[in-house]
Length: 257
Image (cartoon, rainbow, N blue to C red):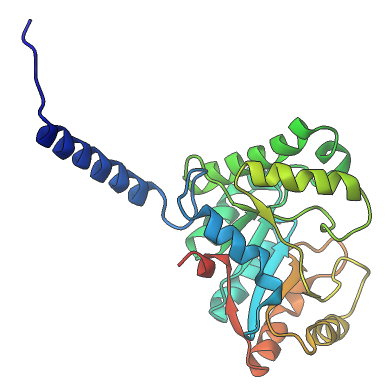
């Protein structure tokens, strides 16, 4: 048997080659935030956690509870027309039902974030394992829809928001679980109340205007559904109003450098 003896110089060169090859794999497989081992995790999470205290006039438009077969395409059409990139907090079981809509949103530059698989608090907070499973199942559904294995959205929104009084103790526990899988969460500081009751288009716009007063960075809550009020009917006017007030639209990809 022939032995191969490597001196220090050869070992160094071999190690350097392996590092470069590994780095190339990361670049190829992790455009934006695609996998659970992305190297930008901590910095990105810190930016998300401080987003609501931003001093610049930036609007982050977010949509919960989709995708929806009739409303999501209309929302995407308007966003494309207005050249606005948004963030979609999707529900896993809906992603599995309408994967093409998620793929379209992703390919058009929108951030696909995680809103859980069932949007059911009883399932979410049944156990630690159940909570983690809700997130992982949703990430897998997103990854399958957009063709990105090991996708990790990194950003989660609690059903009804973290600030809602229901399940408060369970949510506190859940924040440490999120951290353990490289996740964080975000609520909002501006909304049109489209999920509260049936509003006219004028009322929805006025709700948004009132909610945005005297605020710099906005994280805006809307829904790409029509379960209560239909935000797609007033979305274009809402965007134009915010632009007229000097807001620049961004989504969470803008925080990844």
